[in-house]
Image 1 (cartoon, rainbow, N blue to C red):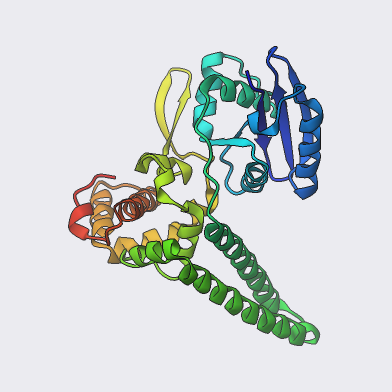
Image 2: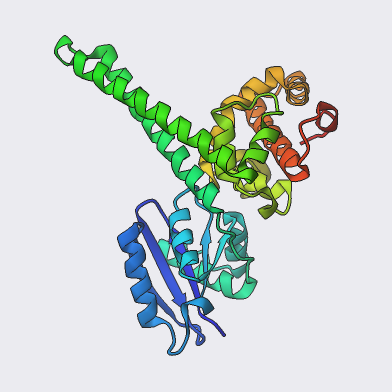
Amino acid sequence: MTSSLGVDVSKAKLDVALLNDEGKYRCKVFANSGMGFAALHQWLQTHLPQGQELAALHVCMEATGSYHEPLALHLHDLGVRVSVVNPLRVKRFIELEGTGNKTDQGDSKSLARFCRMASPELWEAPAPGVRALQALVARLDALQEMRQSEANRLEVAHGVVQASLHEMLATLDKTIAQVKAQIRQTIDDDPHLRGRAQLLHSIPGLGDRTIPQLLAYIGRPERFKSVKALIAYASLSPAIRQSGTSLNKRGGTHAQGHRQLKHALYFPAMVAGRHNPAVAAFWQRLKAQNKPGKVIVVACMHKLLAIVYGVLKSRTPFDATRFCDANT
């Protein structure tokens, strides 16, 4: 039997639990950084059973937005088998076990047991073009946040610092334009990304800002077995809360999942609610049912992502007649 490693990933740290053949654990905490990854690699080489190679290790972590991705890539490049699973699967596994030990170390141990018992499918690393696009999209987001912060400062700035702020804004504008050009070039240079971008441009509501984000966050659409899998990945599945005798109360969407993908769909869903016939019809139907505005927007984000999946998976441009009658 091979060893299983459960990794509870957060922004700053990695809580890991190595489960050996005898059912015993070795636990440790590492920084969620390049130095932390190197330390984890060294620790594994020390504590794996004698004669066991890294390639025989199976690592399991939850999909946690973008926090898990650098570690998953690092381990994958080392030849380690990596599984990135929906947090809901692990939550149900813990509930069935009845352990209920909600600590970071407890979570990593549960992930190690889940890995051994469920043998989840292996994670598919993004292609080089997608990796480059992910880095550029993240950089663009950071630059735009920096620009907004500087613009906010300028509104209330003393005259003595306004020239400095204007200079910084000009520099940021230039850098943002350069990164946008790199994004366009990266998509144009990759035939798969270019083809997917052309398909996404056929969907009303999606534009030059959102399409690179979708290409970066979704990657190869075939890695999702169904539209429901992609919806869950984007944390747009409805959450059901149970408390005492009050069952099946809807409580919005799940917090776990790829928050950047979810965020990227918010404004496009509002635009699609006016200009995309399939989404607009859905919007009006929900409005006629007196659904709250926030519920309508989230439902249309769900609908728009389902359209994105259908267009990408079928490799067929958007056709309103194909999606207008769908309930999702």
